[in-house]
Image (cartoon, rainbow, N blue to C red; front, side, top):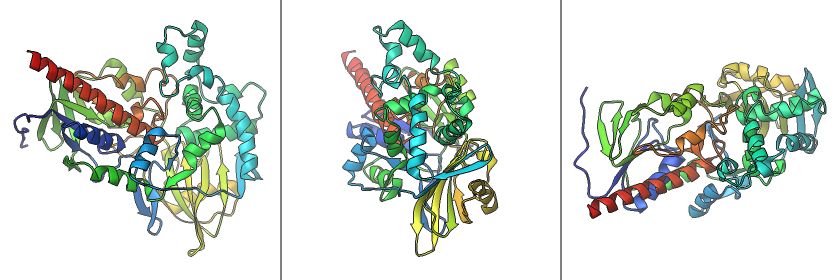
Length: 461
């Protein structure tokens, strides 16, 4: 196998970015603006990472990954404004269905939201105390002024499951199943293993209101798709973006970083920023090895083993429907009405990517039949992010214990190695693009600070 060593060290400092998702693209833009020489290596044959606008179901532009944005998500809204992107709402729906103990219940979306709001208030309990600064989520553990009782309650809130608070006798099984439907989709995994603290954090980012949380995570889409935004950011870059170029290993010390590509080529820089999700870190060899705590998180994986599926059904159906996580699809709703085709495109989410074949009409038909809503599937599709070797998960939702003992282990640099991405964000951790952009910016600024400090020290010496 041939090897290639990078040319002599340039006059300007240099950084290698692993991954061309939002975090990698924004980090590269920030570094370039400060005069840093940047190279990006991306394993996939496209940019965008887990944000990917593709043509499916008869040539319709659909989001395979991240979809919804909001003006109360500060980092992505800045980018939307910067690049003059427009947004539009997902449609209101007319009919709601939910399943409990084999019985299908029906009502309006408002009735469904009203029932859910009472359950969410219980799930969100404590969010104001636990997260006085939502973009500094571990503040109560860091602050010397934190009341010891609050600290203990905060630690306890990361244990058990997100639905434990509903199993007190106050709520019916129908209530619990309704909440399970919502959070099986939200956590992209079993609610039995889902950290209760993460739901409370989402609440704190949404003014502690379930209606605002729904609006931020399920309401507004980019008119030009996520592609319109990540393409615009990439167009501002001068650095090379090498696609279909996986990184096999990263070696680093106090002074330099060395990347070995899967084809044997070698590149060196003053620092490296790895933006791969937690689920894909096991594909990269690190030297020195990741810390014991980091390796434990990688080995355990996140709670995100679910899926997103797009479903085209015959006729016009204005619906939202939920089913607890024992069913393949936990949440489905109408997204596009295709009057010219006399069809509707729905988006669905589930907690187990092995429970359904999202490319098979018959498999998806069996899943939607649970609601007895007359939905006849004529096409379907999506992308299995869990089976994708370059993600190994959907978005990074957290297992019990991982809010405190998980993502935060990757936020501090080790030598010249840094991590960035939605999985490691302090604000919207994992679930929306806002966290990826936040992490890309903050990590790039930290790298710049380190590089400038090193330059100053060399000048003194």
